Image (cartoon, rainbow over all chains, first blue to last red; front, side, top):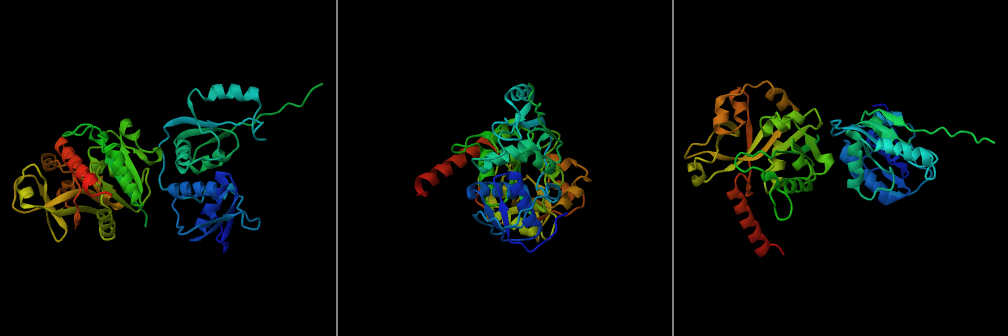
Length: 185
Length: 231
């Protein structure tokens, strides 16, 4: 455990699952039984929360989910988060790799169309596509994707929540960053 | 203290092959057992070496075990401190058609005092005289023996057990004796290796699906319930 305990009661939660898990972990490590989570989208964060308590040992009793609050605590350090979780179960590495790649039109972390098509053709041959790391439709969908990630030998893909969560499951994570050539005359 | 329910399941049942996937009013037996146990509020896992069984359970809740596991106890204990990290484990056999939360809670409580717990209920004289039924001989909740021969005493050993990680350490050192093969009861290994198997008495009316006849009986009871009691 490397988090510092504090007297904070409220946490800010964005729509990124790894960031949400980081806030839950801090609240759990700080032994806050009834934490308040201030969220962008409450229904999405409830999905994150249910997945979190399924995967990790916690002592939460009655968490409260409220709308966004700029002043609530926001824990940024992913390294400390990844080393402070307590998994209920571990996973056999039954898949060679999983992946998730995004196009640059959807995120600044993405790659262009040509690179996307080439890379996808390579990755889909023997890998499991985790898909989007946001906008989950159900707890089961998120838990299934996390299980596939946890059961893989390697994660390959965009610098998104999957990449941060790979470390939680002790999986090497390879970030696909495209070098954009400067425009030429 | 954290507690998980573990459900060992396989396809190669001697008396009723493939029973894990028989239809129980619209869902496979193993799925029914899993759903009911999960509804109790415990983290629940199915332990199996069968892809067919794994296919009907949510991926997160499947623990893959070795085909070399010799029995249900072996299958459960192999996962403790490997894939699973809890303080207490309640083993509900995969053929327990109607899991009972009261039995689970009784075992969970008994695990505060001992590392391996069996659950039992009182047996009728008809059951005690039936040579196909296994009788458990116990006094003061300490198990002395299991036997199938006709007796005029004995209790009914249910398909529920409890373990702490300490149980695994001991189990892995045990010798297998011939009597447990004759009676088809691996729990005898605790007794024959001079260890102590404790038990807890419970009330339970559920049916274990060991044979096709048990399946017919369950369907008869279930249909009666649906027709006359529900709604």
